[in-house]
Image: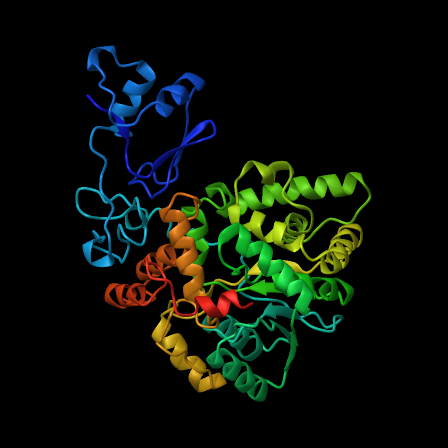
Length: 457
């Protein structure tokens, strides 16, 4: 028998890594440790060497048994038209190379729908934010003019009647519809304070250049907003920084293994926070509230890189962001000092999550857009994109993530491919609408027209 690695398997260091999404129960087990001898044997495999099945080394026999070593690898579809689609959602073997469907044609995302229905976020969930009369603002949000941030802004300002500080990083790729939506919101929400700020040209060029070298795109939003605004949030002692992502985006972190499953459980979050506060008390510092420890951990990773427990869990995207920040020391230094100050004084906002799916009767894209158009004068993007609606180069991010994953240079499954499938499961849009959005995405061999715009940054 002539053996070779099955399509989408690759030796990486001491592991065999699967660049795909395996069927249940192996959906979250995409790495397999192999011995030094096994690595040596695999390096010699080229599909031309004949092996006697009765004399096959045990380490290779196990891989044959598990379908990792095969005689005939599976071909990859050359287009979306040739792809196998999940019978329940829009997941398919083209936009997610290495996707495994079960015997009923159902993908791992759909198979885990019931199991993950109570999965919310790795941040503390707080759908009701208390007013803070002693503070200048009750809450801050990152506001892009897109669908999700506009809905969050409307909910906090209009439903909860809070004094909101809306922070907009004036990214050079903000879409015309998002800019128009921001202007409309400013005229309709007098109780909201809007701050807009760009990165300085030199810092922007340096950060984007480093990000492009690392991931073939400049898309690292929303993290540069922390460089711009975090020091001011600490100085003004803003009590809450609220993130509002639709449920699909939160669960995509789990499928992309950017956060371990236990981190989504509130009791695990509380136990971890207890440990953090125990250390703070031993050093005479004020304990963190729920959300402050989470923000401190995130800011520490962005400012100084991942260490300790966080370093044990790979997060390619956060590593890219942190390394990109290193290219702009004039912004990184005051950011690092603000992180140190927040740790010493405890004057950090609590980073909490509002579950947009809990604010009404589900997070249905059509009804959310209609509400925003009526209440805020929100302007829909050209082409009726539903997933991400504020950036002109979103398709560039999709293309870069897809090509790097297809070529097995990155373990990150394209964010949009996961999020659209999960959004169908959440009832945000229909399967047919999601497939139509996939056809208009950047996930494919053809480079998006917007690529030249990104390259000019």
